[in-house]
Amino acid sequence: MAKTITTHGVQPMNYHVPSVVNGSPVSVRQWMPPPEVNTRAVLQLTHGISEHSGRYDRFARFLAKNGFRVYASDLRGHGLSVPQSELGKASVQFWADTTADMKQLLDLIHKENPELPRFAFGHSLGSGLTQSHIQNWGSMFKGAILCGTFGAFPGMNASQLFA
Image 1 (cartoon, rainbow, N blue to C red):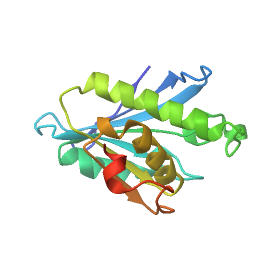
Image 2 (image 1 turned 45 degrees about the vertical axis):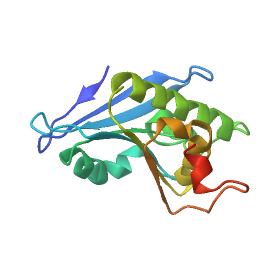
Image 3 (image 1 turned 90 degrees about the horizontal axis):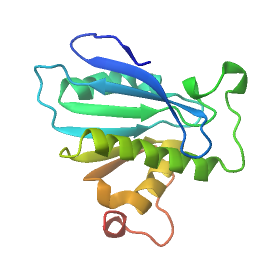
Image 4 (image 1 turned 90 degrees about the vertical axis):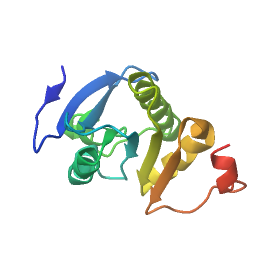
């Protein structure tokens, strides 16, 4: 069940969805704009290694106060997606499984917000995952922000990412 707490008009929620890969729980956080603020766009946020989506609470609240719906999941082996005893553990399939989880969240975002422009934001490991995400699904985004990134993927340029 989703937990909703309202602070300064922003409506954050936290819930779990079963992964399309293997049914394991994926923790999702959402920050919704206050009712009096028109929603302008949606942001899919992907955190870095050894982090969790809750670490971006202040940033997400700022965006929500300014009309952005923010969705962020805790990556495999991170945050509320695993028991504390499993933090930091990942399989050799981490990249493929995690990008599948990211696509699942993107599909949810699109279903819940079909008319709003979508943006992707990734930090550190999340920026690398986001690069892969936009290589595969770039046409579903209006733009992307890569923070603390490790550079471009070989053979790709900006025009190809959003083709």
